[in-house]
Length: 137
Image 1: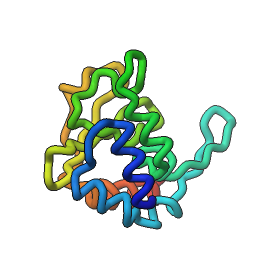
Image 2: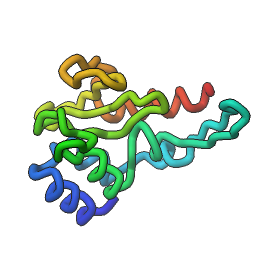
Image 3: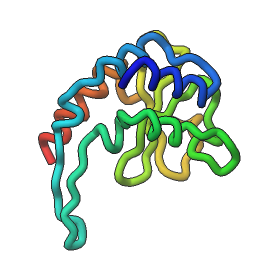
């Protein structure tokens, strides 16, 4: 991701990203793109990587995920909650832009974001967990 991508995201969400989140995306770990999982789901082979799902690396994808207009993905989210991606079962991963460490949280499909679970102390930790979990699929 480039600095202009970061600026587009910030313009779209109406606030700056935290320094931790900005630095993470400017130095996005290549392993998140290279780590892939393939599995058979009801006769279909699906190949995915964390950069496509749980930890989206696309500026356009992040802007779409963080659409706060009624009916948008982030309509129920607070201004400090920035969606990072979503899992295969509809769970949503987000970071608190007011938290300097970049802690990552998750809520399940249909669940109110205020009931989110703390799943990683930082974006870097979340990335390591994802890379490890994809290697075990």
